[in-house]
Image (cartoon, rainbow, N blue to C red; front, side, top):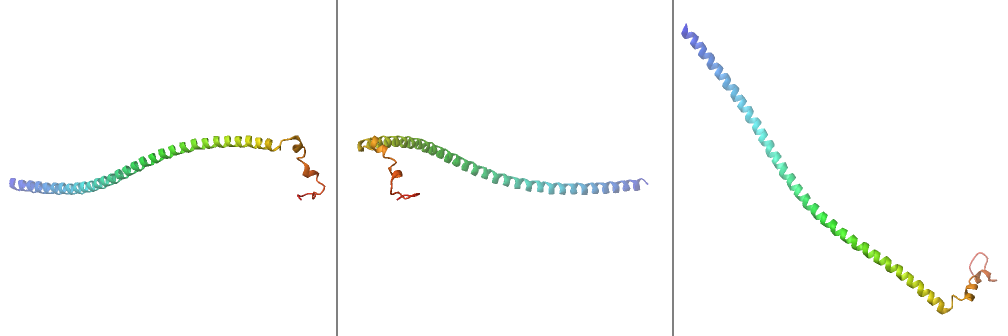
Length: 135
């Protein structure tokens, strides 16, 4: 009887070990699949990070070039504003000079005499003028 009990116990232990082995192998296979999936995800993430890093580097270089362009444009705008201020001052000075010279010319030609100024409205007093229009 002792032999039969030992054999049953041994068979039970073998079956239990076999079941545990199968469960361990199934867990191992599941863990390997999960590790492979995580490894593939890590590779995809690394590739994505590489692409994003390259894009950031290109954008940073483009931004630096853009900043340099903006600085160059700002310098150009400053020069243009200064030139515009000079041109306006020159125009005001030229208009003042022209007005002064025109006054001197009028004086030299006698256009500022009281007799000329008195006859300034002579066309309004003409007898041969067409009413409502210019002759």
